Length: 384
Ligand code: NAD
Ligand code: MG
Image (cartoon, rainbow, N blue to C red; front, side, top):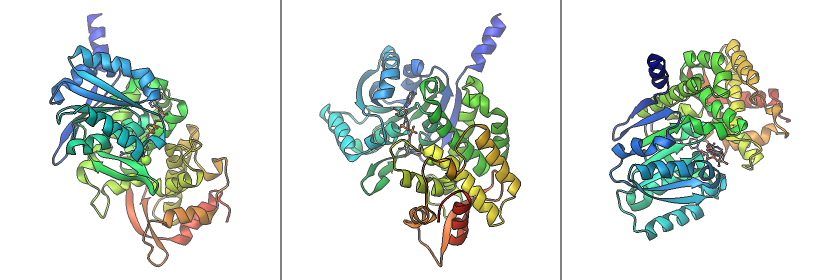
């Protein structure tokens, strides 16, 4: 029995993924029950046992107490600041409220900011940490699947302005990321699938073997089997960490971080049209966008149609949105195209897209004819 117990403990030992960058390196710790052990995990990587936890009301209700208890047990002095849930929270107003509250306490350079929540809290708290006293130590405790596999890794922080999303921001790498997969048990299934779309995206960009693994394991990932879920988070984070290490500040003209936008040009256009009111989650837009990127790649002769078929089958088998016509709204080719061309330089009717030569082989293509994009949108159910 001791052997069995040891084997179980080994199985549930957290996975530790190193992220190695030019001027910073840190670990993404992935596992179950990490919040209850946060104090012991954070103590060795923070300069001082003082921390300010920033969370949203939904997440605080569920996970703030166990986090503060664990930090307290390890001798941390803590304070917490709670913001309302939702994308509107990534605003200058909330930023000012948080920094006012923090500066009022005469915060010291070594006090850490801990983000406990999804990507909204991570981006906002990260920007607060990046800018307050020119940079406070920062910890990410992502509690959505999307934030565990995407936003908590890579160091991008920021807020929205009336001019657009994420227009004020900074690169600020965390001292450690704790991806506690137990927190996902309370996340609505729609949010789980939206996060899963970003996992599928990473496989489709650069790891065909990972996509095949997803095809075999999606029901266990979405059903939150702990080991399968932890492996999916680890593989997606490790993929993102590799891309980020290769192009930390998104400076590369070819490949690099820009590839992480596979499916996003289409996705952002759908989001912009449906508004950010929760009817269409980012990951749902990405799910449809990924398939559109494959359709466009097939149409332009870069990608075999059988790969598009696999992507379509995978999304549909897992009850994820696959086609524009799956959405409860009609879109016109012209309006979507307008969103896509708004902030892009167009040269002779040519657009830049992340396309694929097949599953796991994304590349930046600078001469996509506008006509091909229109044809793909029409084929997927847009009205002229
Ligand atoms: P979110 O932070 O809004 O969380 C979604 C909802 O789930 C919220 O209502 C939240 O309160 C709730 N929630 C969070 N964790 C929960 C849990 N464990 N149980 C129950 N409810 C929970 O959304 P998100 O999808 O995590 O993040 C989206 C944001 O991430 C966007 O603002 C996007 O711009 C940003 N983002 C940033 C990066 C980056 O690199 N920095 C990358 C991708 C996305
Ligand atoms: Mg995304």
